[in-house]
Image (cartoon, rainbow, N blue to C red; front, side):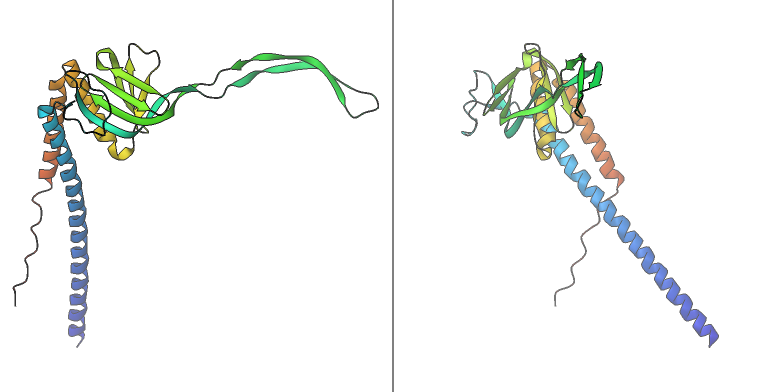
Length: 245
């Protein structure tokens, strides 16, 4: 009888361990498939970027959608058009007084007041310049320039005068051009930021003759993501359907 009890307890323990192992395996499989789904999505985007670098040269003025109201010059093509873009430019913050005061204080007879004579020495320090959203509007990237058209301001960045493009967190892209002293740029929402940055990169690469470098970067992204996907092994096959009655 005792032997039967031991055997029953051992069987129950083995069953618990098997269930725990199955749960761990299921959890690992679910995590692996979640990683696979993320890589597949990112790989699709990387392949689309690579295809655009190889084959997309923008939309000409005759083919542009009616809701894009930018006047396209002869030979110019549009790469992207963003609504609700934010114009970002440096603006000075509030200044402050820096200094000290000195003097002599003496009581006024018959009152609780004190009379003070002296001088204040110091200076007013201007506030630091920080990137500040100043307007909202549309932003268009073309083969020769970028254009912001807002409610209060308009700006143009010609690729022929471009000095640098820098992407900052939170999401805005600064573009320095030789014909403007202060750097300005554009902010977009986080959901569209990666695609927004790519279209600027593509337009600038074509305008500056650096398309081979961008294509190599995009190909490298595709290769790395493909390698990561392959390292996960084959995707699990769909479960077999039960036979029809």
